[in-house]
Image (tube, rainbow, N blue to C red):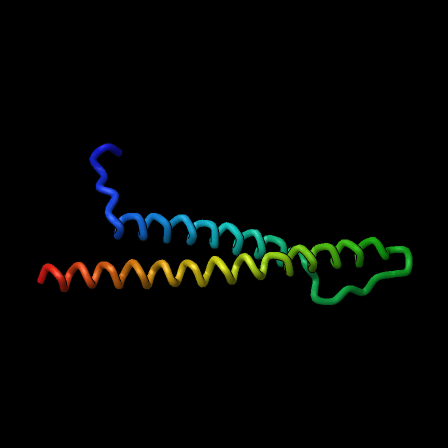
Length: 94
């Protein structure tokens, strides 16, 4: 890693990669939770614990919404900034 030049463009692409990887982890976690969630539950009176488990699952899924949206917006902004800087440097040397 000694020969890597840490230019602003390279730093932006690294930051974009890290943020996008975190976004992917959160999205996969949410998907894993939603696979276990049922749309409708038909339970007997003695199986109320199943409904409680589904409520907890729904709360966990709801908690992932804000981080996913935040990371998606940040990833998009970093990508736009990276491409913009890349184009600027290209036109500047043209």
